[in-house]
Image (cartoon, rainbow, N blue to C red; front, side, top):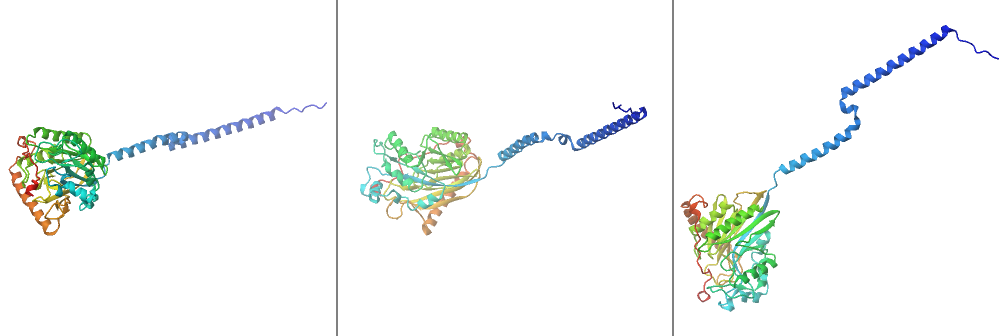
Length: 415
């Protein structure tokens, strides 16, 4: 049997010593590498030693940046918006049953059989603006009982197309002829006009219209002789419109003394009351003739536009009238005070010796004559304004409007 050789003791010691030395060397090398890695991690910051945390940090940072952008957008000022509004005077789309039927507005409608005939000379102008507003003086109804008054005007409901066919978008109903055939006739007129997309307003009814993204409020006010209550209704409506988010508040006032080319002191006071209450513009009608205008606290007050498409007389002695345009710049809730306005001289008729019921823009010498008439009224207004208290909101501004009971239409026998 083969005998296993034995290793001498000295050799064993040498081998053990070599193994121990190698193990020590390996341990020292590993410890050195670990220390270097720790130092590098400390130098690069905590995220370098924990790369798995980086996606979480990025997810938090992204919403924070989006929130900052949203806040910045909210803080940024809104873009200004410009819109042009045109105002025309009294539209009496009908006649009195006591007038000569052969020359009446109703007879003319039957002859032409085209509602676009009446406003065809101004339709392009109205179509080019952003909003056109008129005073609807009379009723559109087949029924009702005639009011006991000197003049009462009635047309057929289909006459509403006269306005809608020429881009008239709104009509004030606050005047002394809106109920000529009773309360029912008032409601019938509203139904007829709004059925043809002509918004109505007046008295306690405010019309809100979205014009190029601007919320426009239309307030219609009527001032008879005892007008304290009507004044409060107007100022309450202006305040209500503002509280309901209206950015632009426009007032159409029915006031003054018929056939008077100079506004009354009460008109001046009432116009100031409206502006002081927050209106951006006040325009008026009722005198059936032109009255001038003024600028109060940077806002325009136009006292009377005169007649317009007027069936109240087959041959008015004074056929002059005017259109008023203003281009507003609205930035958020701020309306710039500007003079971007246009006073357009017109006639209620396309002919000088009779009423064709076709409002026509004046040109040449006729335009110059009407412009001069407006300026004469302006000069009188300036003199009157100089004698008024500084603000229509003070005690001196609480006057009433002196409006005659009759209408500007002349008796057909005198025409």
